Length: 260
Image (cartoon, rainbow, N blue to C red; front, side):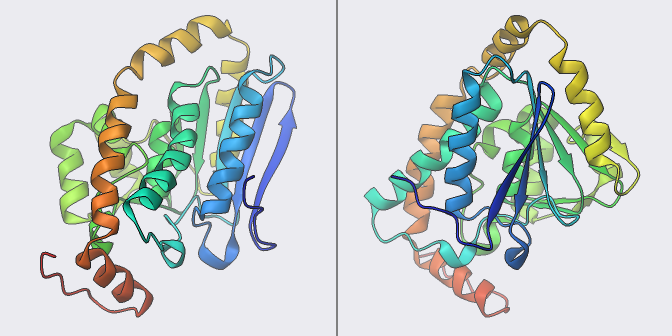
């Protein structure tokens, strides 16, 4: 049985013909991808995977923010088994987005950080408003990039540029993101969802099998990458540096990492 989202957490679903729009809405945490929301997102994506009436998907965030990352307050991994299970459940979302049969368009306004960046990069197309801001930032809390980002980001921008974002916690705007290939299209503020809808409607009219098989081929190697990530990140969940990073984040101070 999956955990039900808390009252202030919602994943809104809206149909427009063959296009399904999923909107992350968690205003208290700037649409942070808390575990209940990840569970709900995975359940919806699994349900529509076999639904022939759905031919394209849009993922976006409410309130002018795509997703501010993972919910740090909910990162309470207490054992290796707990950490591995947490990641196994979350990885379902990435598999459905990156390797599922439906084309997926991300409509990004405002912040797209951490787990939010992972979700966006697992999508097939990223449409970003001119005010969008992108950052990995996992190292700030003593973790490595996860939710497939070590696989999907280099595939978009190359390993060298990905390392700059991973290691230096660089924040980049929409114009630079488009220049380096992280974003496919930049649009005026407030227009990301509308333009993403145009792209999704086009994709929904194409032959579905070639798109599904193209996605499957491009995602070859994703499963292996997620399994390595599952092992490495679980080790980091239990590290002293992650505990320090989490405490520093919650206390709004700079962390002091000691290599433990």
